[in-house]
Image (cartoon, rainbow over all chains, first blue to last red; front, side):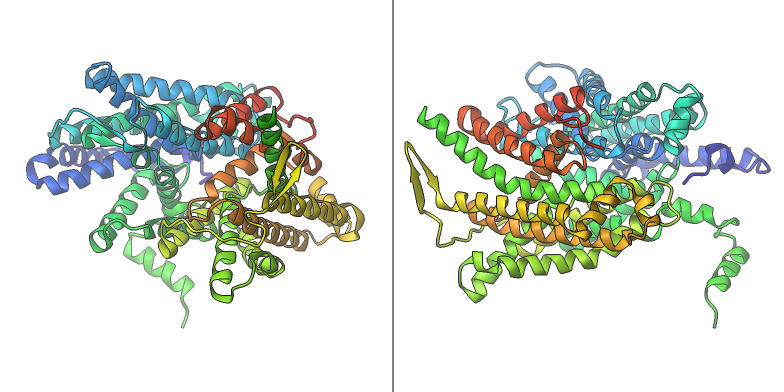
Length: 334
Length: 290
């Protein structure tokens, strides 16, 4: 978890196989809607949506080390802003998305400014209270349709939503890679996470950097919320502002590995896989909350670095058969 | 004027109960640097325990208060080693891990309650329900008064324990400086367990009264998490006496917003106030927080 970004890549490995792998993955993702049924397109869209959300949370939670327990609020805000923009104000979809993202980022900056100057606990509390507050407001206001929710103009085109979600989530990962893994901004965040006083002493304007990071991490959920609203065409406070959205982001990032680049993607994929499989068995159930809660507790207690941390902790990759065998023999003796 | 007085008294009475929750929550932060997201879930579980006890054993919920304290004390004592594991050891961000862990606990408890008992709203009644004490122009609902008396009594007893006994001194010492306290022979781990268990017990007991005053349902906890947060933010994190002022203030705000504006805007009002408070007085309105 604390391994600096630069150390993760071993210099000996050449870039060619990774590029090939990346190109293959991109091609597979781009061609997916032409090859599978609409059921799988829907599942893939969901996985991409959550991968984007989890990485957004990772920007503030993982890279900066400040836990936002109200991140679902930005998602819901985006959904409602796009919904109201399209139905009441007659905006086009794209305008709704941009306004959603900008508004979410602006609100995040406003909340972040007083709370990010204090200890992490205040920030966690304030964001959580913000989420609860926004849900209550959405239930009361008339323009949001109150507890009954609101309808958006129907646009039933699965591949369209697949590509829009893919584009946005890819943008999240690209931004994270360029801005957090490969730029001074990312190193500033890392310095803040590892030792805030020291970072301040060497001249990092910690508050400004943190507020920027929080605004950035709120921008994408706003946009993704807008996409989600138009995709499902019906939203209500519990579906887009429910606490479970934040819960899922947290569990995905923690399971995958906090502050790692690939962790959120891995976590989102695994959690979606499990939750969709369970959904086939149980249908809608509150037992998911139990599972999410238990998963968070277990990960915190026994594998604080998440799956990526677990893999990195072993010097040799576990996928190599001989290394895996040695790892196994070191632990299991008979 | 009558309405104003009534609102004032109602608010102050509710404030008495909120103080109990706030004191434990604040102490938890002071001693162990843990912000317990599960605070609302302790309230909810306390209320449910009272409900099931009354359902199967009969009698008045009030007589189960000591039993519920004991039960929740034990539960807190059992959970504490896990929290301790989450915030210590070879981890890089102990405070963050503690936060996430209690967040997971709270999700687990809420999900468990929803799965086991569903969304039904339940209620318990006590011999005090429906009775009232008249006081000049206003009347005091007896149950609210009992809740207030309970709150004041518990807080006073707890304060006496904290400021008057040797154990209380070691708790306050740990809150002030963990390392020094440990060097001077305080078993900080045991102190932590004791504080967490006491806090769980007190919060569970308060849950019984809250359940009797309002209604009991699985998602009721969230509201009390916000209340507890609000109280400690205004009081200053970890500063116990400030909790009394902030708790009363919260009761009043809730009551006045509910009566004069609308009950549906209370969270909004609380959030705004909390925001302003963090902006202008981050260490609490009395400027004594950690």
